[in-house]
Amino acid sequence: MEFESFLPTGNPDKSLPAPPAAFALYSLGVNTNRDAWAYNFRRDDLKRNVSASMKFYNEEVGRYIHSGKPPDLDNFVGYDETRISWSRDLKQDLKRGRKAEFSEGKIRRSMYRPFCQQYFFFDRLFNEEVYLFHCIFPTQESENIVIWEKIGTEGPHYALAVNMIPNLMPQGGSQCFPFFTYAEDGTHRRENITDWALEQFRTHYHDRSITKWDIFHYIYAILHHPEYRARYAANLRRELPRIPFASASPVPSVVKDFEVFALLAKAGKRLAELHVHYEQQPEYKLTKTEKAGKKLDYRVTKMKLSKDKTTLTYNRFLTLSGIPNETYDYRLGNRCGLEWVIDQYQVSTDKRSGITNDPNRGDDPQYILRLIGQVITVSLETAKIVRALASLGLADAENITTA
Image (cartoon, rainbow, N blue to C red; front, side, top):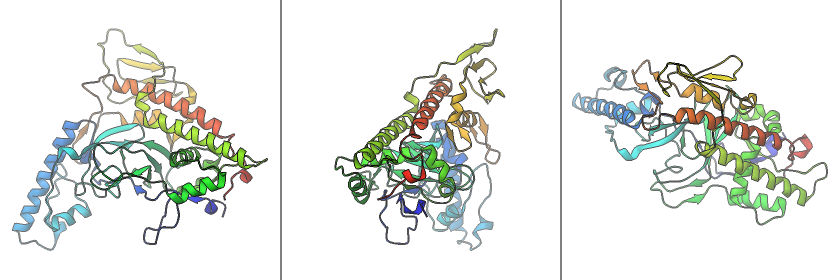
């Protein structure tokens, strides 16, 4: 019952009037049901893939109408997987006679997996479900920061702050808690931390200077707190997080409790800065060994770690060594940050569609090499901050208190 007494992050039953919670709105990550078509490392490839698939879809709409709208839609549509990936909602759109419309403005940047950005075609017809992201990132210019949480029983819970549209994620999915919400045209920006939550924190700590940003960053720190994650691992796999107040037990006092809250908020702010701006972090210096007699080459096909995980075979030309063991202390589910990069930044071809997704950048050939060093830096800094969190107010069960 202890977990149930903490502050809810959101209202899980959308059919009921919303009870008080920390966030007014939250959303599942975007679900396309056709990731091979809707995502790509290369903008031109994405544009070509989406345009071709939409052309085929529109042709099928026209054929359906001219055929007298036959009732057996499943047996009517063409199942050429090199041209389209059908889903329930897309078939319903065809049945309604809705035409697909391509627009350059629908191409966005998206966080497909941790530390893996791709171009993404954001469209209510072409995506199976956009959920509430038309209110979170309604336009290309809409700025926001979202706590992207992996949920579900398959794999440990984790949270990552991102500033672009996140994917639903396989095996359980993800829930996303934004700091801002917008009207669908990108106007009327408002803070998504509720006034109720603000009053709860100000009353508990007897301090009117607490801001909604403080609460957002405090929540992000709590979601990284090692004791919180360990003690409530089972809860976090099956329900939305609930947030305790920090305590300075065994000698609690309003002043000391607020000091712990302030330290956690500061730590959460630093974590968010690291994770959102990971591409701006300094590179960790690895030893680079180039193969003699080989031409300079930064192209990646598929990288591979050594058994002891201290060396990375980047390609046939380049090997990187000196990866510190602490890199693997910062885990996002069953992988650390570096392992996510290795897994995602490889040339892959989708078996059904035949679409190839190539992460190498012609205009920035050293991007992946640089990213490896930056993600190692982020991992080391995150692990250091997380270790320090263990001493901040949540080490013992009696230290986790509510109002």
